Amino acid sequence: MLLAIDAGNTNIVFAVYDGDRVVAQFRASTKEGRTADEYYAWLAQLMDIQGLKASEINGAIIATVVPQALFNLQRLCRKYLKREPLVVGAADVDLGIEIKTDRPRAVGADRVVNAVAAYHDHGGDLIIIDFGTATTFDIVGPGGSYDGGIIAPGVNLSMEALHQAAAQLPRIAIERPQSVVGRDTVPAMQSGVFWGYIAMIEGLVARIKAEIGRPMKVIGTGGLSNLFRQSTTAIDMLDGDMTIRGLRYIWERNADYRERPPAETSDEA
Image (cartoon, rainbow, N blue to C red; front, top):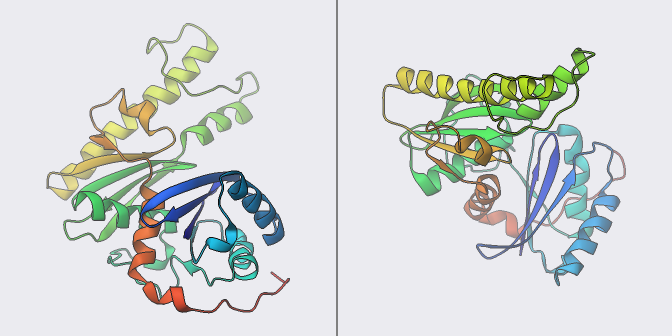
C-alpha cells in the first residue's frame, strides 16, 4: 500500500492507497512542532480502526508547502514505516511535466501536483482554481506544462482578517447570502466575501482566457469549491481529490523509490 501525504498550511491529509483505490483518508491540523512519534501514534490508531496495518505500507510520498513539517514527516516514514519517502520538489524526482516559470523550484508542491493530476485526467489548456488557505489559479498548457498562475488570499483568511482588523466586525461563517445587499452587519460581510469572491473568480478567469487566447476548461478543487460552483458558470467542473491522485501518479512515475532503503533517522531537526 502507498501512503500519500499532502501537507498544507491548514491541514495535512494522509491517504492510504491499495493499488489505485483510496482505502482510507485521515486529516490532521498542520502543526509545525508535531513529532514523528505523534504522527505515528495518531496514524497507526486510525488505520487500526479501519482494519489496516501500518506495516502493510510499502511506499510513501510527501508534498508539503510547510518546510518546517517536512523533517518529521520524513522521519515518520523512515523510522516507523521503514520506507524512504519520495518528496515532491526534490531534484531526483520526475514529475512528468515541465514547469515554465522564472523560478520553478519556488512553485508550491501542491500546485505542481494538481497540475500533474489535472493533465493526466483532463488533458491540457486548463485553469485550476484551488480554494485552500490561499485561493490559487494555476495554468496547465496544452502539452501538460505548468505555465504559472495567480495567488489570492483564501476565503477563510479574508474573513479572519476582517474580524481581526475591525473591532466591531464579528467572526462569521462563509455562506451564500440571500441577497447581494446586506441589511445587517453579518449579511453585509457574507455578501462582501461571497459575491466578492464570485466576482474575483469570474474576472480572473476572463482575464486569463483573454491573455492565453485559447479555449480553456476551468476546474475547481478544495473544500469550498462546491459552494462557489453553484453560483457561477465560470467553473466548468469540480475535482475534489486532485492532489491525492496527483501524488499517486508521481509515485508511479518514480518506481525506483520502492527499492530505496530508508535514510538513517535522527532526533535533530
